[in-house]
Length: 570
Image (cartoon, rainbow, N blue to C red; front, side, top):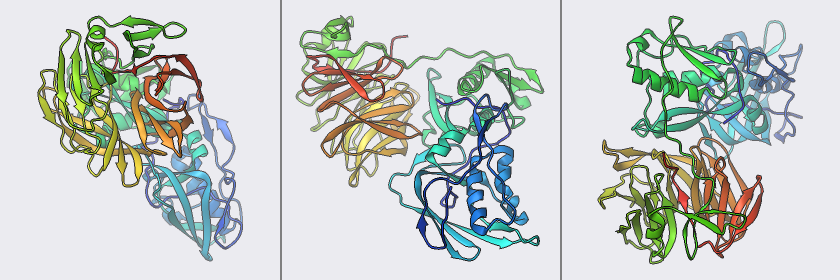
């Protein structure tokens, strides 16, 4: 999740807009590439931020040139203290109060920026964005969207000093500085059955994290793409009574409106749960207050989405959890192992209770297999990809060349047509439902690119899928993907190919992606960072375990299928 931060008074986070600003070094009046960031001031510890580093950028120097004023203003974006008070010192009096730093953050790769002087007192800045952050803290990876251009106008004031009279709202930081000033935090919502907590990742300045988290959770809500797929206990009349959320002795005090007093204990307990888990990176305890009096509430128990740390595998003789130095010892799952053995399976995904599995066999058909021995063939359409099973017992299936034709089959064989599935995609190579059942991710072909998408799942009152919400583009993959899995509640992993080499691509939902080399011919990825690490199976049946962030160790052979786990029994 991220580094801890402290109390403060920032109301929200900066958002991305096409007009923002960046750290730049200018050397002449022409269009010149720059190298190295402008000095933004030395980082110092801030006692009001739970130990996080806070930057104190320099203000304008006397008789600074217009170029230096623009550079200093841009560099001051790294200092959110006092509502970006230092950055405002570079502005003319008439725009100090109208410039809004919270409307956008553009994150760019260091060095990918150019500043051009148009005429005296006018400058244009061009940057290549890597990501953008909106007013709620939601991050969107920019992909190959191209450069953005930003304009600045300056004028000499009565005292002869140059000041900015027109500047785009928001700020721009290179990625290294951005990750020093900001951190990611997961707002926690419930699934519609109030069984699971669902993370919704946001980015806030560490200096004001507690306030930003509480405001986004209590006064805001889930990201737009999650609407209808998750639930929140916070209602009108019980919003924040004051914006600031102080943290003293690791206790966060959240002041709510008087309407919170009239809420039932079950609602208050869920509110406490959302606040306590969301604020966990910055506070050990959370007190909900009305008129400075504490409300009685306790966190509720939620179902974990963690999986067994052992790999779940099919060999020629058995199906179950592999253990031992060479993975030769298999602990079978009662009933389910015996039911799966007669099936020539290519892909297996087992539900959290370990009573049912979604299977694609060597004939390409998708079936549901139960621990009672029942095998129900569900889908025989051609070119089906690996199926996925959700917490409600629905098996998701879709043909590779028909991404919009997603079907979900219930335990009784009933079929649900999932509407609005992957619009615009020409091909789908992988699809997985999250372990909390609220989201589904897919690797699709969008034009000439392989991209990773995610969407919220819409369901009826009985839990049957009815459609998908808005598509969230997570990232562009280096090449086609052959496998996909959820590592945890907010991170995905895909096996992808780039110019003949195989890579593991990991992607935070609402964060950045990363790649690392994998063994050749990898066919499946499974596991989790907090559950024994990731495992890979290759086309020769070799099983590999992730060692550190870059290495893979061969731990077993003769693995026919590396199965996906959807959680653990209660």
